[in-house]
Image 1 (cartoon, rainbow, N blue to C red):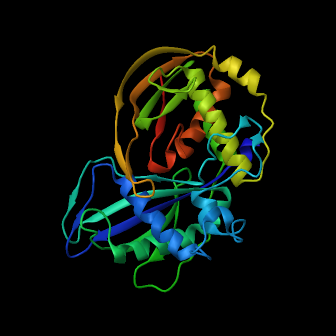
Image 2 (cartoon, helix red, strand yellow; image 1 turned 90 degrees about the vertical axis):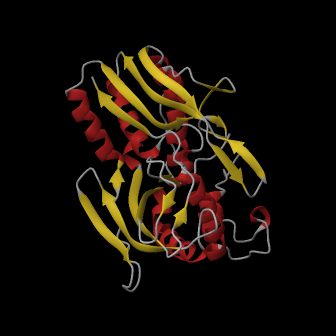
Image 3 (cartoon, helix red, strand yellow; image 1 turned 180 degrees about the horizontal axis):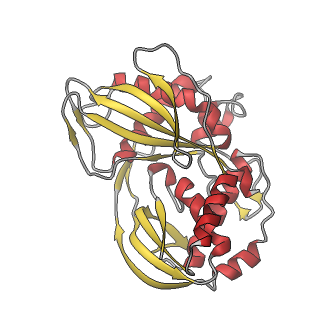
Length: 322
């Protein structure tokens, strides 16, 4: 089951246009919001209809990518709160907001499972978005090139280059099997402790409320649900993990040290016409216990993130040894 996970990573390089760029410190919100509108315009087959009543709902790229719906109300882990989106952005954490004309900016896009097939549409969307402009004043940029990258094996393949014809997509994919092998290497040199860095706000819900009490079993429950959803909805795999036993063992892993704080981001939703708080925990925590069977899950979380609002580059974690 876990081995069926498929992840493709793409690095986009942009060049600010003649007017430069003005972006917020949290760039993921700008890229995700502006991108969604253009993606829908390019892919929507019946723009006059709402997605829910559209006859093309089952095979249109837009609802699959942005409004993924369950085929049934209940699933392997009970009622669905939210189906995981099959993509996420990772943006620079440098807080730079002003870019002069000609300045370069990169960000990463990660696609999961069946969404990998839509990579050329993502590239076309960001190329078109560059003409329309983003950020304050909707200033244009140029899409210079896009690379499909495999950091595990040091591979990269060019997908798009400005002034060259077409988009070439022969995806390099990281698999769950490779992630498991990485985890086994980490296990062999392990000490029974791990440190997890929460690099972007981690939004964990426990008993219906967001929490900054990052107990291991709470983190694992959230990751278990996310991995189940990604496999079920985007890989056509029906996981049969022993959930109760996994959670019981996760509850024996102890939180022995932490340094965290709650960090809030504001995001304006044009669709809902409201400003939204999207905060979570940043910092680090040290866990101790029987961790070997959880290392593949945590290494996978480095690629898929964990918690709420992962598409906006929230819940980015990094696993370190002790």
